[in-house]
Length: 178
Image (cartoon, rainbow, N blue to C red; front, side, top):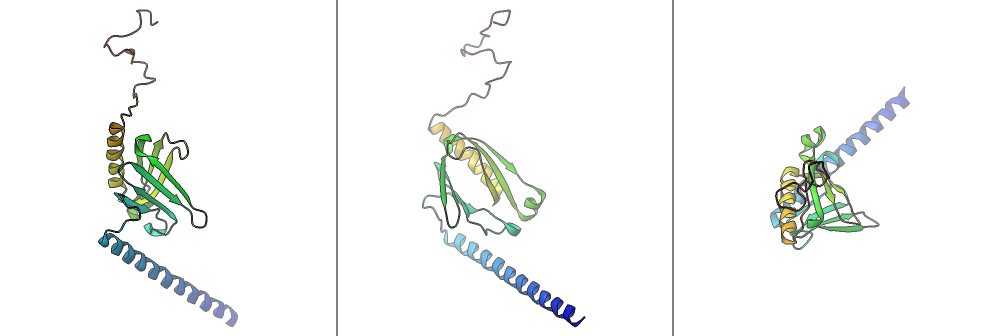
């Protein structure tokens, strides 16, 4: 019985120490983020948005970093072996915001982006804060870049009702559908 009590006391001390370390880490992370934001510091020189993938309780404790400038999105992943990807905004075609109940509780969300980039393809921006504002920022910047680079997609491809292929306003098929 004495051995069991000793083990339980040790476990209780370990749990208390872990809780204290966790609370200190949360406080330091929040203070660091607020200090960085107040100074206006950015990781990328021309970035208009930056964030990290957020893990436990919406805290930015990961080695995945995201940033956006007026022309490109940057993705940096890894600690020992780091991979740097970038996608030009005009190559992005669709932005979808997904928020689970847990993400809503912690004020984060995930963006799913369809892209025609060959190396990265379709990708997700996982667990970012202010995800609704970021989605709107991405949508606006993508449209600006698509217009500036004269990149257009034909939304009606595959639509069986669209039979005006030459743009003159009349159906291009004969009466029998050919």
